[in-house]
Image (cartoon, rainbow, N blue to C red; front, side):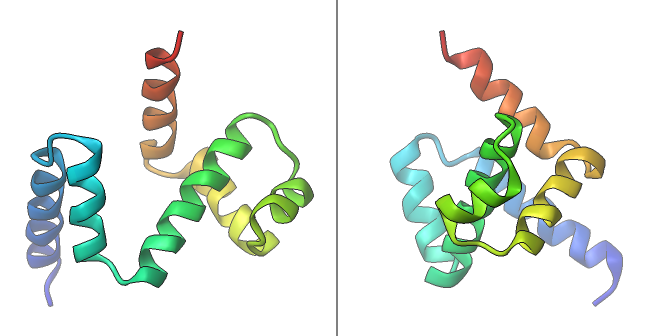
Length: 98
């Protein structure tokens, strides 16, 4: 598969996610789209990102989530040097909370 096709597919997925509408519809869409293992992996990585953002140490995150320290490090690297998606969403959620 060439890069343009992958980009088009990702753009299509992004458009579908943007059109979901609400939390319940998003959950149903993700449950249909992902395997249970994929969905758990995504959810755990998001939890790890939130914990890292709050300054929770790696070892405590491991205790809370059961994920490997390698996964915690991978999420931390994405928070620091990724495309900014985690930071953007964490910021948006912080703005929504009083």
